[in-house]
Length: 330
Image (cartoon, rainbow, N blue to C red; front, top):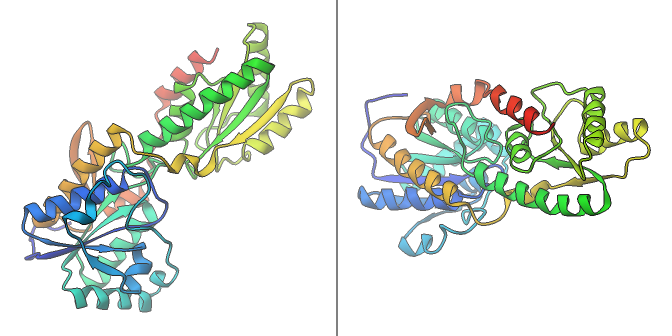
């Protein structure tokens, strides 16, 4: 991070890695803020791969018309193996310079921010990262762009699954995304009255799950939905359901993997507002000399965290949320 700003006239904005609802709102905010501060804004299509292939276009007002409410990212996203090489990054740098781009706003997860960090260290291109990932696993922000929408999508799907689970007295295992973090699972579990929540960060032995299910059976619960976060050491929903079936062979067990359903859909009002605030703050941060940082929100205040810390430090799940979930599932 530096507080000695260079003179910035042109900025580039890109989305990279997995898409997240609210990315378009973030792009729009960057463009609008850029225009407000008399900057030229260039869209870099398909992330770092587009930077290498010179898929860079100047954005105008019409470029961001009616994108606020759209899911996905109109700039597209892609993963780039070539950008992981110094030769690839050199190509990307040369293309940026050919357009006169002075600085970058990078919207994505830890891989995307890692690329921005390397680019700044090697070529001195100032960059501010925006936390755009449904996983909510970046340090330096309470919430990431797309997380709220993903939780809403998961809860809506689980509500529908519960209808059929109740109709047939079934036990459903529902797997949600999150890579190796349990934030979606915890929030979706509390919001959908799950019988249990299994996340990578905390051990939940099968024996404990069996005891929970038997207790709920005695309490005459009409349905059981167990939320499983992907990436757990005990396996996904399918593996865990098979272990439970061996111990409780009379249970009618079904498995649903929500998958990329959670990435799509129109962003929630919360994600639109969060993305808008962070997009404007990213541009203002660049103009004030805040480089190699991620802009986030903590206790409803805008904060800037060095990218290296944002991607290296672990973001912990809230033990209080887990405690509350345990109480509500009994």
